[in-house]
Image (cartoon, rainbow, N blue to C red):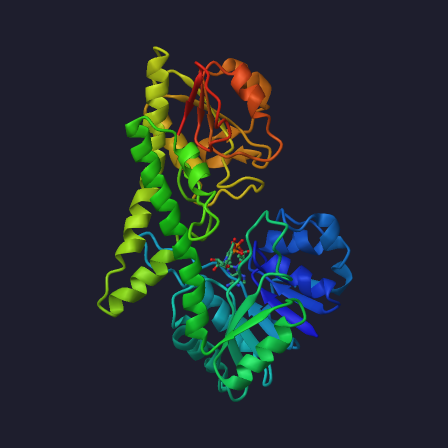
Length: 415
Ligand SMILES: NC(=O)c1ccc[n+]([C@@H]2O[C@H](COP(=O)([O-])OP(=O)(O)OC[C@H]3O[C@@H](n4cnc5c(N)ncnc54)[C@H](O)[C@@H]3O)[C@@H](O)[C@H]2O)c1
């Protein structure tokens, strides 16, 4: 088959590579000229796709900025961003723009699948009318489906191949066609009755995580006030073999998905006169975590007779989660801003993030920084970091990830 992938980011590039590795041809379209150029040269900036893996399939991969190159594909899969606007409402700008451009080249018999996370109704109410500007009728002249991406960047045990894939078609025939296409790269397919059901399923998955992370974060703040160790409590509760699912507290939620997607549903729910209180509350608790963490750092410095102002604070790990360099919505960025507002001198060390241009910082080698700082803050526990050494070297360590759990030391403070 010849497959089109629109948007070659964290979702689109791995998807393209899976189809290529399954023996198909792929045309990838992205508006980012630099990204297209890099991919065409076999250079990947997505951790899950090392450049060697991309180069091994490059002969069947056309990366382009031109939608016209999609004219001959059998299926076009859209993986463009779905962010929030400044006033935290769905920003369908990239989706609308991609839909319009695709409509200009759409051909009879093609399948269009949306993978971007969005509110229920987007495929039917927003995407289909755009595609029909082509003069072709959805469900008659071309097929339309929605299938949410479930990729967890940095994860190797569950991939596109062995993660069940939910698919909802506009019509029965649309669903059948989408199942055929995804059957080439996924072992287990989960058909649902409509695109709306598939859109809502994805939001349920993300909201479930957001709410549970907020719950354990709230308990972490309470445990802190009660002088209890939240990590010991979570470890103990997690031994229950049924009816409990483990979530760890931390400095706050990051990434493109969890801080953003739930609010797509909140926005949609307003149309149905229904406030989504769990979603709002989880958002509030998770957004408050960086503020709580900064207070914790200030308290730790105070115990060591130091003020935040003028103290050298080393942030260990600035991406939003271990093993990736993704900075989107990372709580570390908010903490850096808050600490700087209070006069701290910030440095950071992160093997996955070479620079923070907007903060005018570059990643420093860990060891000299540990010796030079007043306080080392463990924000993201990247694999391979030696936290025993951190504890042995830094004058003061604040651990927001529980990597020092079970340990006590005069220079250690833990969430
Ligand atoms: N990253 C994840 O872990 C993840 C997981 C599941 C679902 N999702 C969802 O998948 C979607 C894509 O996310 P991502 O993380 O891959 O984003 P990304 O920013 O990494 O990649 C999106 C790409 O789309 C391109 N793009 C933007 N507008 C375009 C247009 N009009 N035409 C063509 N290309 C365009 C961008 O240049 C970028 O390269 C989002 O809806 C997101 O919520 C992401």
